[in-house]
Image (cartoon, rainbow over the protein chains, first blue to last red):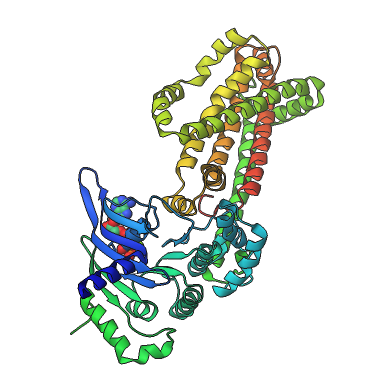
Amino acid sequence: MSILVNDALDRNLETNYQIEIHNIYKSFDKRDSAVTVLENINLNVRAGEFISLLGPSGCGKSTLLKLIGGLLDQSSGRLEIDGHAITGPSKKVGFMFQKAVLLPWRTVQQNLLLPIELSKGNVEEANARIGQLLELVGLKGYEHYYPKELSGGMQQRISLARTLMTDPDILLLDEPFGALDEFTRETLNFSLMDIAEQSGKTVILVTHNISEAVLMSDKVVVLGINPGHVLETIDINIPKPRTDQVMATKQYSEYVLHIRDLLGVGRK
Amino acid sequence: MKATLEKADPVQSKSGFIRKIFKKEALLSIALLVLLLAAWEILSRIGVLHPLILPAPTVVFSATLELLASSFLYLHLGVTLYETIAGFFIGSFLAIILGIVVSSNPTLYKVLNPFIVVFQAIPKIALAPIFVTWFGFGPTAKIVMAITICFFPTFVNTVVGLKSVDEESRLLFQSLVAKKKDTFFKLSLPTALPFIFAGLKSSLTFALIGAIVGEFVGANEGIGMLLDTFNFQLEMGKVYALIVILSIIALLLYLLIEWLDKKLIFWADRDNNN
Ligand SMILES: Nc1ncnc2c1ncn2[C@@H]1O[C@H](COP(=O)(O)OP(=O)(O)OP(=O)(O)O)[C@@H](O)[C@H]1O
Ligand SMILES: [Mg+2]
C-alpha cells in the first residue's frame, strides 16, 4: 500500500519538472573520429529553481546549456521542457552567451530592441523596459553608446539586459559576469537572485565560482571532465532569501568545502 | 566616438608622436616630388630626354591647360565617365546579387564554383576585341567590358563577407528565433558591408580601366580613343595631359566612394588597417 502511494507521489513529482534531462550524451565529430564531450547527464529542474553548473574549463558546461537552449542536438538521450522534447530554440527561453555578442552597428538601445524586433513585439513598451533594465545592470544613461565604447564587463551587462528584454520564463546564463570585478559581480548576483525570486523564473547559471554557486542556487551540479559527467548534484538547503549573513554560517562553508573536495581544489 | 575624447594615456600620446612623423613624411614626399619634377624639367631642357619619349613637365602642364580649355575634352570625358559609371553600377549590382544568391545555398555554391574559378582566371582584357565585334563601336561594348572587369572584386568580397558572420552571432539570432529574412538583413548583410565596400573600391578603378581598354580597341569617342589619336599624332604633351586628367578623375571617384564608406560603415575599426 505504502509502496503504491510513494510510486504515485514520485510520478506526480516527475510531471512537475519543467526541464528534464535524461541520460544525455553529446559528441562532436572530429576529422575522422568522434569526441565525447558529455556522458550520461541527468538533471531535473522545477519551475522557479535556481541551478548552477560548476566545473573546470572544457568540461562541457556551455555545450550542456546550448543543448537545453535547443541550439545543439544531443547525440542520444532525452531532453524535455514542459514535457515536450526540445527541437529548437524556444521563446520561453532566454540565452545569454559566454561572449557578449552585441551588434557593433547598433547602439545599446538598438541592441536591446533586437529581441523585440525579431519577435515582432511592441517597441513602445520595450522602450520603457530598457530604462528599467539598464538601471538594474547599473548602466543607466548608456542608451546611445556603441558597443566599442563600452568595456568588456559593460558589454556583458548589456547582454544580460538583452536576455531579460523578452521576459523569458527560463534563463540560461553562460558565465554572465565572467569579465566583471568582484564588487560589481556580487551586486549583479543579488539583482539576479531578486529577479529570479520575484518573477519565479527558472535560472540555469554556468559559473567557475564555488561560493557564488552555493550562495545563489537551490541546486549545484558539479561536473567532472573528459568526458563531462555529473560528479554530484547537491541540494543547497539554505532558506531564501539569502543575504551576506549566509556566508558566515557553518552550513554554507560545509557546502563550499565539500564542492572544493569534489573538484580537488586546495591543500588538505 | 565619445571614447576618443579621453586622450590622456601614454598609448594615445604615442600615436600623436606617430602622427607627427607622418606629417614629416608628407613634407618629405612633397619635397621628393618637387625634386623629381625639377630634375625631369632640366633633363628635358638640356636635351637628355627626347620630347617624344618624355615631354617636360611644363609642356605637359600647358597641354593640360589647353585641353581643359577645349570643349571637345568634356564631350569625350562625358562618354568615358558614362561608360565607367554605368559599367560600375551594373557590374557591382550583379556582383552583390549573385554573391548573395550563391552564398544563400551551399549546393548552388558548389555547383557554380568551378565556373566562377574558370571565368575569374580569364584575362578579361583579352575579351575587348570580341565585345567590339558583338556590340560595335558605341558605348555598349565598353560598358560590357567595364562590367566584366569590375564584377569580380565585389563578387568575391560579397561572398567572403557573408561567410564572415561569426558563430556566436548566428547562435544569438537562432536563440531569438529569428526569421531567415531578419537574420539576413539584421546580421549577415551589415557584417558583409565593410567587405562589400572594399570590393566596390577596387571595382570602380577596374570599371574605368575596362572603359578605356574598350575604347582603345575600337571607338569613335571617349578618352581612350583620344589617347590613341594623340599618340598616333605624336602629340606627347597631350597624351600625358590626358593621363594626368584621368588619374585625377579616378582619384576623385575613389575619394567619393571612400567618403561613402566611412559614412555608411561608421562602426568599423579602421585604426589597424591604415
Ligand atoms: N562546436 C564544437 N565542435 C567541436 N568540439 C566542440 C564544439 N564545442 C565544444 N567543443 C568541445 O567540447 C568541450 C567542452 O566545451 P564547452 O565550451 O562546453 O566547455 P565549457 O565547460 O563551457 O568550458 P569553459 O569553462 O572554458 O567555457 C571542449 O573540449 C571543446 O573542445
Ligand atoms: Mg563555456
